[in-house]
Image (cartoon, rainbow, N blue to C red; front, side):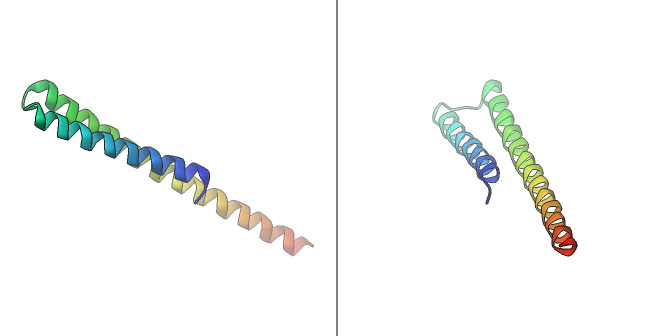
Length: 79
């Protein structure tokens, strides 16, 4: 796993941990009001966006690896 992939994974995990902590605090504070619901929606949205970003970065890294491998193959054939 590359450094960038690991950073994106760490970000997604951190957002998930924050979402969990938010849920626990809202439950402890009887979070049934509209502010609590909005906070939950925002946390869920942030998690989805982090997951989407992680998938995009993983796909970009995969594409770059394929390009580099193809370039290496062409160099070997030319030698």
